[in-house]
Image (cartoon, rainbow, N blue to C red; front, side, top):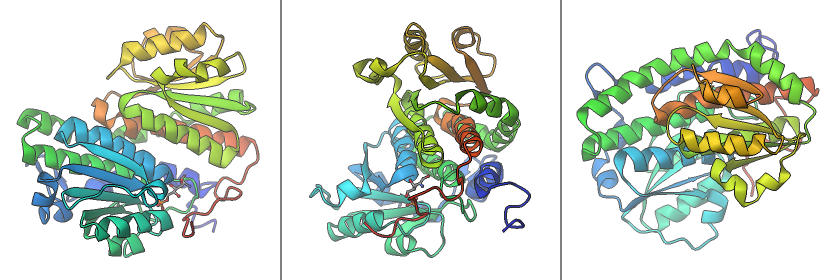
Length: 369
Ligand code: AGP
């Protein structure tokens, strides 16, 4: 097992560090940036299904569901296709309205999640076209779907999903961009800029991994917190949910993820000097709004750890700690902002002596209801 961990203390840490390569492996051969082309057989062969779809319904569980939420922002923003994101477990039992004009995208690292598999069968029985985004080749979900695109993350052993999440977002970005190009909802120049920018992501993730010591230091300050809040807006709202899930599952610290603007509708009551709040405040999107959310936390003595864009000065003055990410397109920020949150959870769990790779009560793939 030591050999399999490749010199890392845990599979989770190894898998966090594998992300630059995993992202490249996922877009390699599909994204031809110089030629301005995205080639994905599963989409190319079924293009009319996607282009004529009334809507896309994304079904998934856990971290894969969070990737699906990022997908909603990507598809709606770039390709202007309405999207609904559903917990597979709710979808399958809700008597949902599904028609032949719907495209269902099922996302699953393992390809074996029972609820997601059942949601696929239901969607197929109603005549929808079902597309899978799986990591495990030949898995049940990969076989049950009409077509699909694999993430090429390589085996993910740690129960806490890391590289599966970022590669799922990579695949969803490619699909959104491809559909946007086909539909003409993005200008040629914007499409090209996205492709060039995506190519920079792996090196930027690599660079982010170098700030590990800084994140470890922040982890040591907040490791004894009983509750934590994660906030983000837009593309980074799902990252806030994912950051909270990562902390919960491996450190057993209670954490909640919220859209930052929802804070004043409830969670703000929790904020005091014992409450660390992790806020994603990159310079794109709704930056000023997030800054004002941060000010609200500060005025209630909350402790703020902010993930900001390199060179930020405004948030730096208010927050207790900042973690800088390199600049990128807003749509791609989740691929960067999620990295320090993974490292933070990892270090807190290690410091608390928890079983990082096999947290209590959890299975890597949930094959029963
Ligand atoms: C994430 O860290 C999880 N342990 C869990 O939420 C997982 O993402 C979920 O069970 C879905 O699994 P899948 O992607 O294999 O379908």
